[in-house]
Image (tube, rainbow, N blue to C red; front, side, top):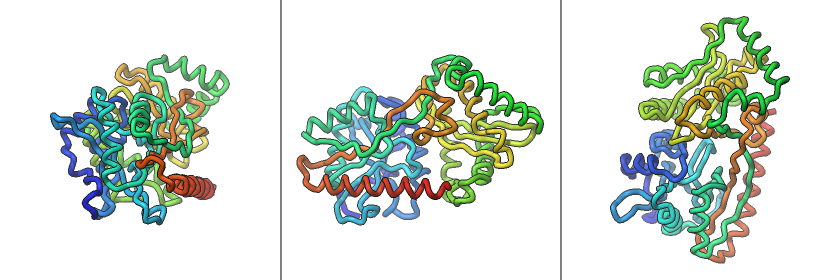
Amino acid sequence: MRRSDPPLATAVELGAWRDLAASALEPNAYYLPEWVLAANAAPDEQAAPRVLFGQGSDGRLTGLLPVQPLWPMLQTPLRLLMSADPFRSLNTPLLHRDYAAQGAAALIAAARASGARALLLRDVAIEGDTARALNRAVAAEGLQPVLLRRWSRASLDARQDAEALLRSGLGPKKLKDYRRLKRRLAEHGPISFTVARSADDIDRAYDVFLALEDSGWKGRRGSSLARQPARAAMLRRAAIALAAQSQCEIVQLNAGETPVASGIILRHLDRAYFFKLGIAEGFARQSPGALLTIEITRHLCADPAIAMADSTAGPDHPMIGPIWRGRIEIGDVLIPLRAGDPLIGPITIALRTRETLRRTAKRLLRR
């Protein structure tokens, strides 16, 4: 590896990373240290996750962004970096709320010091305090970021009354339909909603989630976590570690003794994140995923510690979109690291073409 490559994520002191997460300007559970190290685990150092970070004079972290090289994917000799997240959940950097300007500037400086020509932030919140801090840091250096793509995804305002949100979001007819589906599901046994929080409960519930997710189209396509045993094992350990800090729970909907839907929820500061959903294919006609999401809505709205929940879903998601009516603006942003770089135009075209091909392939695979 070249000496200018960003340091490995494992080189960052875990306590300092956790302190930054606890003082973050905006939450992002997908950049909690336990989750980053598990989700991005790689068999060798070449592919291991790296980080851009800034430190104050007292040694505290002011900003942190996990990254990986982009140039191998584009098959170009140009050095480019992109935010790291194999699940493309949320890549908003962690900035210290008291040192956001310094942290944002440090991330840009660290990316440039690596020798990269540009930094691609994928799946990043393009509104909010962190986005504003990054935009100010970029503008201060005379750089012009490029918004490659933007979209909205569903979110939940958990400060509201759950029943009022469900009535206004779904309407009386759809709510009646879901009550009917719930009654049909109850023919297989009493309906229960459970939340796993302790290490032992998370461990057991994780097995149920893996089985449910693998029973559906992800299993048939080979993309379920159960078909990625090394990553599944790492995420199990991360889920258990985060649960010890009240930052992970696994929710489950059951018909009698039979689990019919399961979801992994991450938590960071006042925000919850709906990471993944698994449903029992044999009960698909009863819409167990939607029924579970309705129960999650009630669960999160009843929790005074949670102000908002991010669905982490794609745009216009047919299941969660009608239930969670709030919207978060997400985008892919390319930040040039040299003012007036003539190669940013061709890089932009290459990235947009690659993303179009990726989304087309994803759509075709789901048919």
